Length: 282
Image 1 (spheres, rainbow, N blue to C red):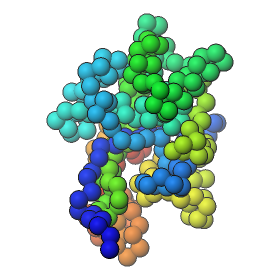
Image 2 (image 1 turned 180 degrees about the horizontal axis):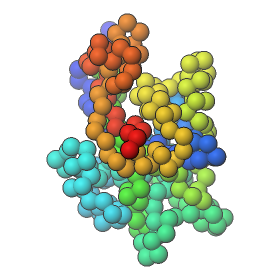
Image 3 (image 1 turned 135 degrees about the horizontal axis):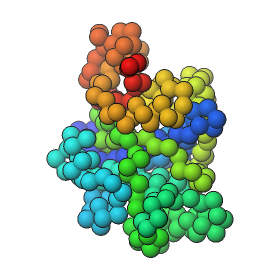
Image 4 (image 1 turned 120 degrees about the vertical axis):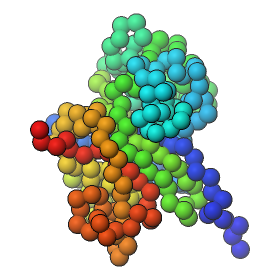
């Protein structure tokens, strides 16, 4: 008899970042999780993971570019600790995808891996961090970098439903993929990575060719309303009001305001709030 009690599963803070780019059409970086992982094994996801205690520290606050904890917390309607979600999203993106949203502290320009020696150095850093041989904070300090939270935008919140062996209160961000950096899965938690258009992802999901969790599918649906990265970033910067997602009980389909059947759908099955949508025509 199993001792698993879903009511006793703690809800952990988590953060994920949707990396987008015009290639030349709007595409998003997707990563396939190792099938052997406890949570979301075999699923295609965005880079992300748990918020660590160290992410919410004075040390990290000192190396963040142009965003305070007060500002971040107000944006996410938290009393404190909002900046830790940004830090966690950047750290996890580096660990899982090899992408680092950062700027040089003195020059102010974005970190690039265009020079082979720099790319090789940071690839080594990533391997050391994942092996527990180096600390992410120490690397950022040694390279005299600032984490570039100013160009990340908060767009959604999802809470894992009751019944999962692991539950997360996850904040979603969106950012342009850093120029001069090429994503690469870590071959540990993630085993494949690919740039895809929202249309490609939705078609592969509907055909049963990709395993994608419902929050991820909903975020891809939201992204599919845009034609280019500039449109997405402009809408994300506007910090529009949260829209509560609902679920049609008959078929478990997630619906948003404006979708057919939204007013009759249930709010109690999935806990999600989304603020990424096209700006109204001025």
